Each structure stands twice: as C-alpha cells, then as structure tokens.
Image (tube, rainbow, N blue to C red):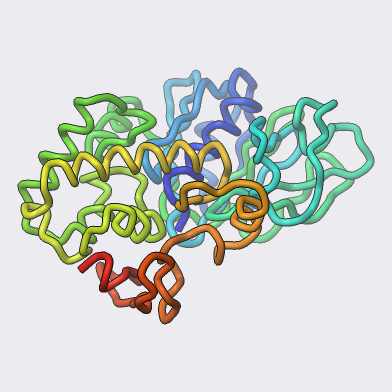
Length: 319
C-alpha cells in the first residue's frame, strides 16, 4: 500500500501541472461516471495529502477524495514531472535521464513519443504513446485531462466527490501528518494519544486516527530505529520515546517526499546511496529481511503477523 510520502508526491504532481487548469473528467471504466460528470469542466484549484489520503479542490466548490489502498495507482502522462531534487529520477525504474532543458518534464506535448509515469507505492516510467491524449490502459476509474496533462486513477479503495464540509469531517478523523500539521501541538497530540492507550505500539503506528501516513514499511523501520519492541503497550512507551517516534517520522517522511523512496538507513552516501535507491535490499534495517542477520547485532530478523500485516523486527535490539 502506498505510504504517506507517495501521496504527498502525487499531490505535488497535481499542484505543479493541473492547478489553475480546467479539467475534463471522465470514467473510462464507467464505475465513476456520475462523479466524473460532477467534476468535469471545473478548474482544479489545489491538491494536498493528509497521510494516505489525497484531497483535490475544484472551483465548483466540490472536492475529490482518493485513497489508493492496496492496489490503487495514478498514471500521469504529458506535461508531468519527476522531482526537481537531485534524486528525483533515480527513485524510478529504468535508466532514463531527466531532460533539464524541458524543466524536468518527462515529455513534451508535440514530441513524437511520450512516456507515462505511474505513481503508487513505487514510481516507474512505463510504455510510450504517440497520440494525444493517450488511450486509457486497463480499468481506469477516473481520468482528469487538461490541454497538456492527463492523470488516470486505477483501482482505488476510495474515490468520491465531497463538499467542503464533508472534507473537513474526513480530515478530522485522521491523526496528524507532520507535513500538514507540523509543530509542537501535533507532536503533543501524537504523544498524548499513544501514551494513554494499552494497544501495542506496533498497532498504534498503523492506526491512521493516531498518526497519518505510516504503513508497513515505515512502521517496522521506525520501531527498529527507536529500538522499541513492537508489542510494547502505548502507555508503557516513555514520553521521550514517543516524541522521538514523531520526530523521526517527520524526518523520514520529508526524505521520502524528496527522494521518492523510503530510505530509512542513515549515512547513505556515494555507492551505498546508489545501491539503496536501486534496491530495497540495501535501503532498510529490518523490512523484508526475515531470516537475515540484523545489520547491528547479527541476530536473525523475525517476521510475524500484526494487525493483518507482516511485521519485521529484531528480537535482540528491540527486546
């Protein structure tokens, strides 16, 4: 499932290339035809993420809420960008250089061949097309089209048109997101919520009403970085440790948005950084490393189910 950094990057894509443009909305699959009709013809005002949820505002007063879930993805094509940061392209599959002369655009409308960009848990360039707009591929729930950019939504868990008041209700149900609700007040809110519950911290970090955006990868890595046993009840986590989790999540989320990958090991430079960007095997402390020696103590990493997901941790360093 895409974690918080991916949704913030998707929101950035809409902000850079769709905001201020009139949008033609359609549902090639047909399952969102009524919703698409309500949105079509409006100007896209802004887009932002709160955790794993994307909110897009239109000048008609309507909003689009999307939760990608386990199988959802956005496909972008046309005038769309990789990151303007140094590592923007290296977080994607393939070896296609950034065209800096085109202001980091993946393709230029009018060029003979153009490339699609898929943004979900992982970002990747895939296939090319010649005609504009490109034909939808597969079961596209919603297509948002401007004169020079297109976004196709596939397989979301949630896709709905909301009014502004209902958007406020949806956001109120979510825990704080460091990139939206920064500052000490949000840190205090997270810390207080964690420390009053007897639920294991490994479950609390996945609870989107406690904190927004953390998924299975970040959960495992944050707990290892804090040397916290995932079974520790929240009310037995020290205030210092709880605040440390919030601050570390803020740090990792910002890095993920910048780089486009969940880089959770510190001190990665040169060849080690290149390896980490190219392969998950070289970018995490414990995630997907069951049976392998801990990078710190050598104890075999274990995997167990927790909250319906696979949890990875070191029974020695996180004892």
